[in-house]
Image 1 (cartoon, rainbow, N blue to C red):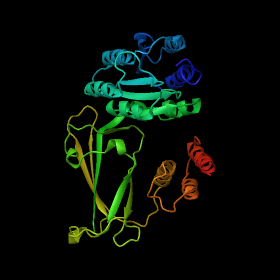
Image 2 (image 1 turned 180 degrees about the vertical axis):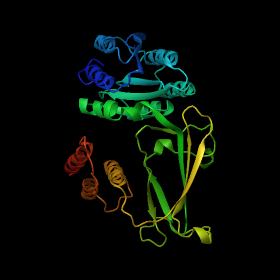
Image 3 (image 1 turned 90 degrees about the vertical axis):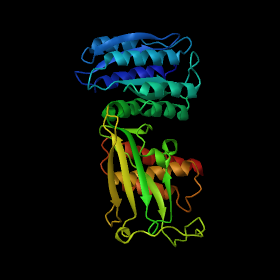
Image 4 (image 1 turned 135 degrees about the vertical axis):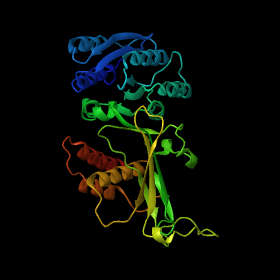
Length: 345
């Protein structure tokens, strides 16, 4: 962590976040350089002098006792949690865990065990070096949290200030989405993204199976690409025995959405069911921009199903759906698309 884009950036990021906390919040800091230790005992967010002093004292050096640090962080968080409160461990890392549990699979198993205590884990990545995005995502997902990569103060502000409520305060646990497509309307479909969150069909009704979380003020969008029966874009041959016909009263539906979620701290999920009906209404800017970003990701990975859809289509869609962009994040994404297009040449 002893590089300008690692610990010094982390210290500035933590200082930014401090201004977003509420009077009743508490902060504790655990370091795991060399050996794990408590840098700051649980302290109210209003005691800014003590917190800033602890942040300034952070130093890089020695080996990285990541597992020991995590264990101490969970113990500290447990001591701070009262009935009805939310505790979250923010793990800041450059990806180096070379003392104790260093195997990613063993780490994720340990974090999954701690998840049952009700303490959430989010992972903040700094620098590149040993940083592995797949490992960050696995740790965060098993800890009922989010993963974010911090490469600048502006990104730190986005994650830890503008989106701090969503990053710290969950409103729904184990959120599961299941869609049954009407074969009279949809012959083929694919879900774009969520590869690491796929569940078996039978797991949808099993409340013991872990799923994703949604934080306060955040939205989650699931994007499907669908192909109508008889379309020249169909990739599969017709089935010999066909598919079951839709019931007469459901032929106007494209599909049927089922959603399960748990209120934080509750063991039993609630079910929402809604038919998906075609509409001529233009999707909201948020949805269209999300589709543009999904297409951007497909272009970056050179996905095989894009056809003649390319950079110009993604840029035009994103530009037309920027809407209200008070912090400039969407125009930043458009500029990244333009840069990617030029590099792709």
